Length: 250
Image 1 (cartoon, rainbow, N blue to C red):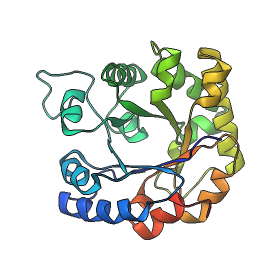
Image 2 (tube, rainbow, N blue to C red):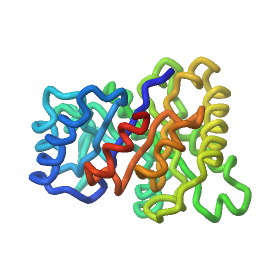
Image 3 (cartoon, rainbow, N blue to C red):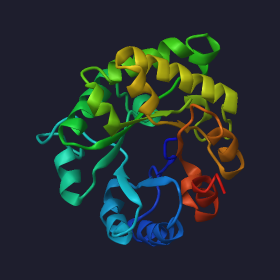
């Protein structure tokens, strides 16, 4: 049985001082938990959170990174900068990066390959919009995102990649895919990974669910056979809401 992977994406929340205080409490609270736990602070908050989490099991990740190592890319942050800080994990392809900032499958693939080049762990996000789901294109969209996003990745590199399925219509809306709907999507994604690599790789790949995950639905979602973890947004900003998700099995 795979270890559950619970990740908190703070998005554009938490100043360095707020993030450090939160991380210190969270790191202490997750001692002895059976889950793998990660938080992804804003770039400027990362150093303070790293310091607060030092010596603990809490993983500190970046929410994004550039598809270049250096150069004239104003406002961007490279994997070299993240690695120098001590960050080895990054979220790529989040729906907000896709929809608000226009990141294509191809650009996300460039970022993913660059992260792997620098031996980083990636949470690779995929997911359909409500219009795509209602028009019957769910599988078409997910297969395209997986195939293009993972182009050039070798089977043995998949151990560095966690896939996060996040239906766009469920992010921050309070709407959540039913556990069965989410599980069906995860099972389909796993079949695509099997076609690209092998059955062994597909079975070993951790697939998180993201989309209005909260304390009240975490246990039901995590009980599904193809759901291996959660990518949590708003609920990761409060210990009272995040810890019950981390400890969903207690």
